[in-house]
Image 1 (cartoon, rainbow, N blue to C red):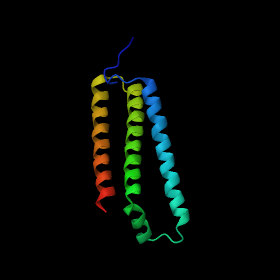
Image 2: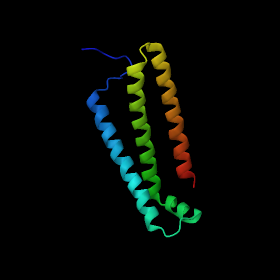
Image 3: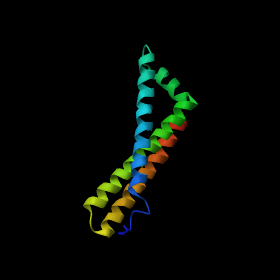
Amino acid sequence: MVSNATALGRHGLHDWLLLRATSIIITFYIAYILAMLLMIEKITYNTWQALFQLSFTKVFTCLTLLSILVHGWIGMWQVLTDYIKILAIRILLQLAVVIILFVYAIYGTIIVWSA
């Protein structure tokens, strides 16, 4: 059995399930936003702000943000693992991706809950 130093014990099935679950969450979020936009007669700043004042929308937005970040991490991990063969460079790039995604998670959560 071949072990990958940067895989952290993950298996392909785990990634596959996470990708499918996050895709479903993202799809439902898009449908939710589109449904809200179709039900609103005139889209103004106030109606948009009212939509994002709802706790459900805030939680759903944060869940979707987390899903996008997980989806992005798995994709980037797969690309870096496939194309960057030098372990030290791959680990540095993966660290950079993790830091960027972590910053996105923090700022995204602050933006959603600050209103």
